[in-house]
Image (cartoon, rainbow, N blue to C red; front, top):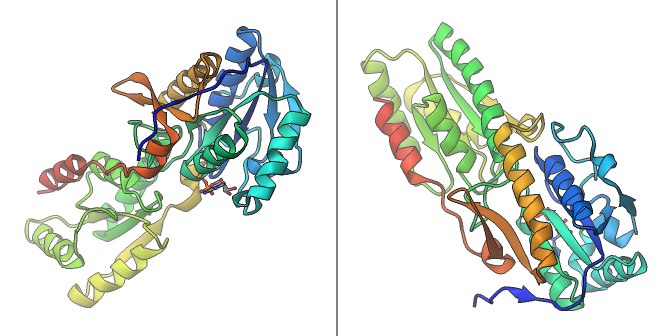
Length: 333
Ligand code: ADP
């Protein structure tokens, strides 16, 4: 059941901010916007380090507007991030809530992905800590927002790498399988596939078979294409590109080269798009808290800021754009 947005009564004087889960380019731009909007509105801000680890271990310190200088262009997160198995247990979340109270932090902004938002939901339900989220993940797998912070940079990084691989594929008349990140979602794969002119795109949600891919490669060879690029999402198991290459070799005898792009997609200076959405979402998150609303994610839909209850953002599946894969296939004739 979908709940309506939560409202809280207490007045907010001091806000906490943290980054959590997988780091994503643009998280710093978002933290900068959060801190500076809060200061501009007369609120105090404290940074919480290492995600939920910082809640439990009381890694909290005051932040000023000037502390945010020169970070808008930096990848990673200056607040550090973390994963905490302990935080999955209520007793540790209680400790986190106590540390917030100790530091007189009234409300919190979380920059992270779906796991981080589940932790935030638990803090609100169990201890009435008002939290608003900004979606920071390269996977773009949160429902209710067209884009997440870091996705555009990851797509561009993967695209640049794939263009370079295309040079080698073309020079040697070779078939390459490029594996991109995205866990169970195929957003990065579908965007990179269309943008690089891939011959085939594999995503976890789309039922493309190895047989179909082989058929296309053989057709392409007949048409005079001497090199091919297949883009595949990592899915549940990073390294699935090797399984695909083996299946293609068995069926055709073709030696498909594999390139797994891996963590380079997480790093680097954020693109203009990521800096802009991060700034807009971070700033809006503060205004949402000031208005007394919480338990929700600030997102972007059709270039407008929207508010999406955490429950919806984390529980509904955001489908990969099938249109992108279809167009990619059409253009690969
Ligand atoms: P992301 O936010 O990028 O999806 P994770 O899934 O690793 O990253 O989640 C980050 C952290 O959020 C976890 O290490 C854990 O501390 C916390 N978390 C995840 N799921 C829950 C949950 N159901 N309840 C409480 N905390 C959670």
